[in-house]
Amino acid sequence: MEQDSPKVVSSKFNTIVNELISMLERRTRSELEMSNLDRLRKRIRLLKSTLGDEALIQASASFFVKYSEMILEPDVSKREEYFMNTDVRAEYLKHCPVISKQDEFVFSMCDSIRSHYKRAEAAERDTVHSKVVTLLRHSVEYKMLTGT
Image (cartoon, rainbow, N blue to C red; front, side, top):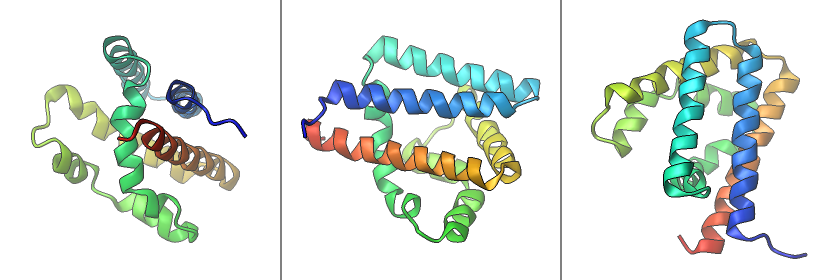
C-alpha cells in the first residue's frame, strides 16, 4: 500500500473538518451559531491562505494526539462525559495564556456543539466520533510523515 504525502493527508484532514462544520450548519437555527460558524470558516480560510493548506493540520495535530486517549476511549459514556464536562476555556488557557476578544466566539461555539450533540441521534453521534477518530489518525500520520 502506497503511503500518502503530507499534502494529501492534510487535504483529507481539511475535508473532514469541512464536513463536520457542514453537519453543524445543517442543524443550526440560531443566528449567533451561524455567525460563529461563518467566523470559523473565515478563520480557517485565512490560516490556510496565509500559512498554506497544511496550516490547519499543523496547528491541530498536537491537540488530537494529546487527547487521543479520550478520543479512542471505548466506553461511550466516559468519552461523552469528558466531552460534555471539559472546561474549554481552561484548556485553551493552558496553550494560549491570553484570550483575545476575537477568540471568545470559540467558547460560544463549543457550547453550541455540545448542545447539538446532546440532541443528536445515536447514529449521528457515532458519525461525528468516527470523523474525529479519522482526524486523529490523519494527525498522527501527518506528524510521522513530517517528523514533527
